[in-house]
Length: 391
Image 1 (cartoon, rainbow, N blue to C red):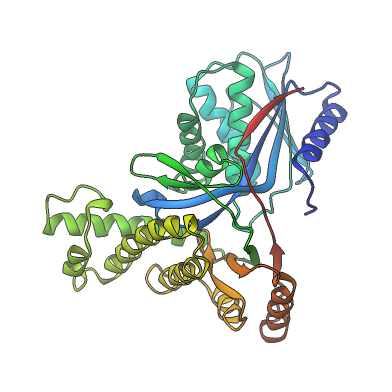
Image 2 (image 1 turned 120 degrees about the horizontal axis):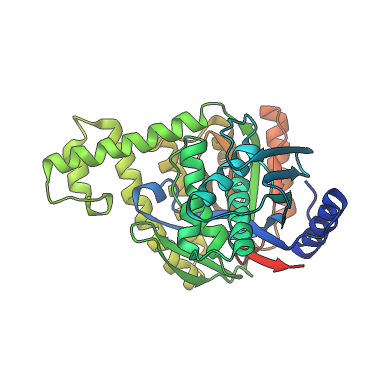
């Protein structure tokens, strides 16, 4: 998908809206995709993570209609839907589920007196692990909030976005993706505590290094079901620990000594909790290392995270492992890991400054010659979170 500036995307969305609906949008809501530097599969268990928004966005144009119908157009899918607020419909296409779910959840709390014209346009790569879905949710909810002057704070707004996945896609996701899309600040990483849903900002001066995402192009069918398995395995692990130590209330109360106690009776659950425990410590170490620009240490922490996701959490796949193994042969590669839910998607790689083109050539050659697939590369900048603009 072509890359262009946020301003160009916003202008295109406004023009396409007028072309389709013969009026200008009342507001344009833009929300970014995200990367997650470290802290993977920790949000739904109340852990820590360090995400940030990136310079790819979903833009939603919106205006009120004179009737009660919702008319939504997706430029990128070249499709549209129409429905009324009182209709109960099950859609097959994911983007339609998100639009319908967002509208339903919003109108359960806030009155929507009029129908809506909605046009969606973006440049967040779909299915690459940079969370185009959360960007869509956040863009939609911000548009609804602004159009209706609804009193919703940002945390409540992203929790409403989360409910779209829970209720309309049956995926019990955490808040990582929505948090990054809504709360990010330019040139900073977020450090999010999902036990309290609080966050802090950490200045991200990456002038000495370069980041690159490598998309496998693989989308394994079992990704969603395996994600839900991990949620359930963690929950069973917590209950097992509680039986050995009733003072444990949450995942964050668990110590390694308590995980060791359930290792024989619950080996799978113990592996999942070990990843959670160690990944939280890696987030804390990474935050300190970023402050002191300890790039080699950060690279090592990324690689430790990948090994843990591969061996303890078991959410990697051969294609992701191949990309990481291939990268290790590059002397100016500092470290990397799979990023996102797993079973496909992309790897996140940290390099010394000035070696990006050489690295891309090595990875492409290895992938084509040894595995017969062509990975895609995605460079990015750290940007701020969602915003709404009046036409």
